[in-house]
Length: 193
Image (cartoon, rainbow, N blue to C red; front, side, top):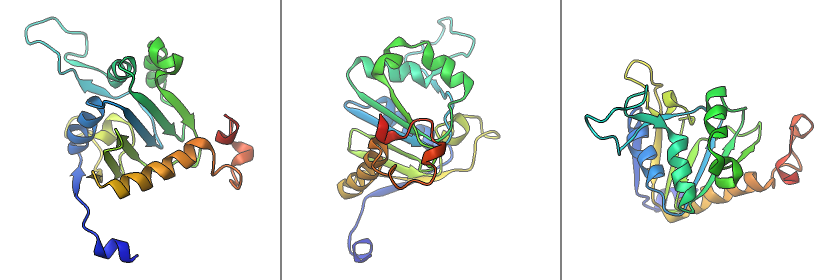
């Protein structure tokens, strides 16, 4: 507890649309890795930074699935992990299944019914911790009257990132499965993967 009092940690509080502006932009600029944990998982539509004014766009204008952009990151060798609690939405599943580079291992996904943490770790240099699920409403990608009220923090503090990555990795590897009381209900305990 003393560590909390004596140590300055650089952080930024993000709320509502700032999740989209800060967290999503960091994800899309990743060079090495993106680790995401969420309870709820939906296909998020993001603005395409390459949309050219005047050029014909798809039915969604200058927006496309974030999975398109994650597929590009995967093709550049960026490690992508997604830890989630519930089955992904049908739209996410369709979008994911349409991208062979993600299906064939570009985006590793693991499900654990006890996951309720919401975190995004980018390149082991930035971590988001907060309330937002990996959904358009959670990340602030929806319009003003449709997005959730969310709040979280972003930090580049190495000790904090190490702690969050360690916890994430323990869950990912199934180190928490042995004593889990939901193990019998779990489709595939993570320690069996």
